[in-house]
Image (cartoon, rainbow, N blue to C red):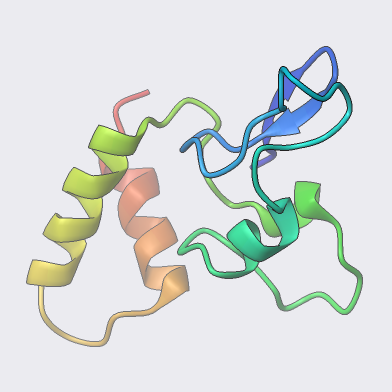
Length: 94
């Protein structure tokens, strides 16, 4: 699932990085660093492409993400990124 698109480029749906209004063309935080450490990042590809790395639903917000993360963590069993993505896809309110 791609980043949320704006007229000036992709931004994180969770707000981990945004376009910087004070400096056009730059971000408020490093998108690479924020995406690599995210629970929604798919880093299995050898090519670095934020559009392909981001597995976050483009319409999710931080509150819903946090609620789903806590629910997934409390389910027990093996916790994986791929398992989390499936859980979110099943329980995310679209």
